[in-house]
Image 1 (cartoon, rainbow, N blue to C red):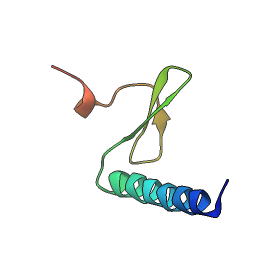
Image 2 (image 1 turned 90 degrees about the vertical axis):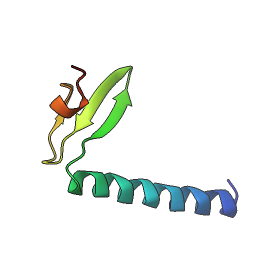
Image 3 (image 1 turned 180 degrees about the vertical axis):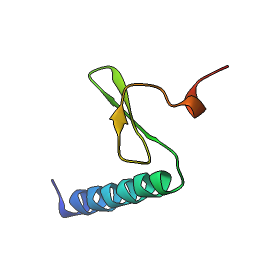
Length: 58
C-alpha cells in the first residue's frame, strides 16, 4: 500500500475509535456485526447480543 493510503487508514481508524469512545461516554451503545450476528457494546463495557431497550421498537 502507498504511504497515502496508510495515512488515510490511520486517520480513519483514529476517528472511528474516538467516535466509539464518545458514544459510550454519552450512554449510547456501539453496534457491531460479525458472521451475520449483531452485537452491542453497552456503555458499561458489556458486549451482548440482546437489543438494548432504547433500540427496541414498540
